[in-house]
Image 1 (cartoon, one colour):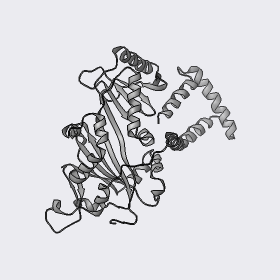
Image 2 (cartoon, one colour):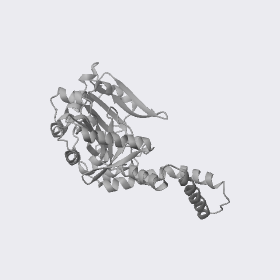
Image 3 (cartoon, one colour):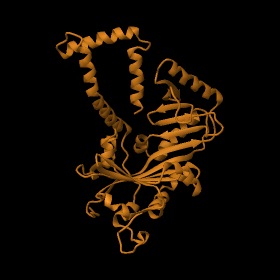
Image 4 (tube, helix red, strand yellow):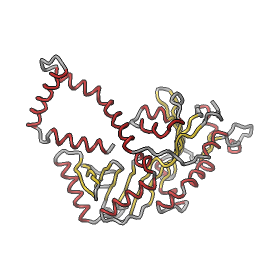
Length: 355
């Protein structure tokens, strides 16, 4: 299907992911304290241990995050710390849900305030930023590959059960730019991101596939174009989109010229170039409700299986009798366990709150 001018619409657009780095380190005292907390979590077989910064509760994870020895998790994102001189002392990943609920600038300001309360005057640079546009009305087929002109030499196609789901341009190891054009509807089916539908609003037609155009832009490219402070990057989102949809990747009308780079820009791609970067914000509470419901539904089959397997060892003949039997089994197990049921519940609740 080609362009449907009556129907092709932009559902949402903007920043979907943001990874930050800052050179100033946290104090050696605080780093060692967090490292001891992380070790304590490992020693007690806990996933994490609570840690307060200001009025916010973080979780010190029992493992490192990439090359960062200590990691704090919050419902808004991750903060990694290292005392290595070869790396920026602080690394942050802001969760996309937080960005989509308050806007990228407010999200950045929140982490800046948190690190200030922890004793670090940060100077943010962007390690990675993902810009996206979700659209309906353009059905991308495999036969259209020849109409994409890209500066990257690496190219790939994705599929699921023999169904084409998208294109990939570029490789992450180059540290510059990757582009993805993929079926967001199919991706949501395979993930826990049903909450994305909240941002599409009344513009979204459920019976039609949603396609995402996404550019993953890394620090090396940003340095090459002179965008170093995070504030400069965020002020230049429109220019970055224009650069990558005008020069780096384009979609063309098939022409008679043997050189496809001289073909005219397609109407579909002109629409993509006109990305508004204006999206609805959805309260974080609403996003969490959708995520938790999805998580609860996803574990029900397993829960039923475990409960019935356990109760097969009993004479229970009703659900209430089964629950009494499970309760007695858990109480008995609790007496032998290193970690109590309530402690485990609190840890799981803390994890759920970080979703």
